[in-house]
Length: 237
Ligand code: SF4
Image (cartoon, rainbow, N blue to C red; front, side, top):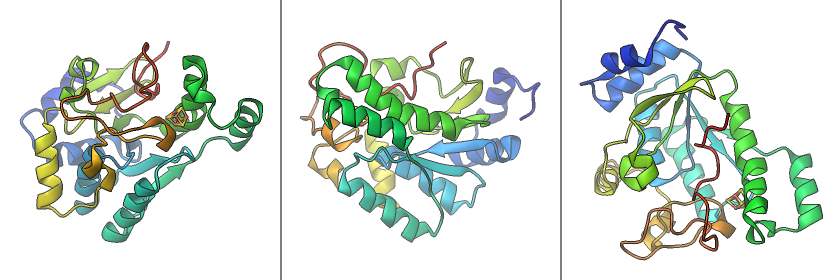
């Protein structure tokens, strides 16, 4: 990373450029210290397509929590077959998961927010930290219109806690934009999207939503309080 690079300079450099150009510029600035994390959601598939089709030297990463839908593994498989590229998989620490499931059972996340956050931390947040180790720029598929909280974010940010830049290539895209791009380019996508699943995470913690319901309504639906986030995009000092 260029240590003297400031967020404003980076923004100026990227402003007015296409997504493809932005990704290319960031890849050249950050060299091998730039990654894209995918959960194979519809937005992620657009970004994966752009990275792979343009042969960009950006590491594509996914977190396998061990509790994903079979349909998610199907997209994973179809994606690596279509593009003939590698997707780097990060698993949770097996000893931590073994201890949690031995002590609390396989559905502890339904019992309390604390248990749910513990499971998300072990299966997602810790492996993500491993994936982000040494990384200076993290790309993800967040869109502003997905939630009020996400709408408060910016298309490129500097995370003072994780000490890296975050870039959201599709920040200004609508869901319709995403769906059209997927269709126009014949990109593999998760078939659960056709069954009312919008934000797709782990199988026991995700359900379909009704038209007009909040983007995250199908995640951890039994919780009445707290953020509908796993902690991956929350920076804690
Ligand atoms: Fe565990 Fe559910 Fe979080 Fe997946 S989404 S890590 S199963 S609590």
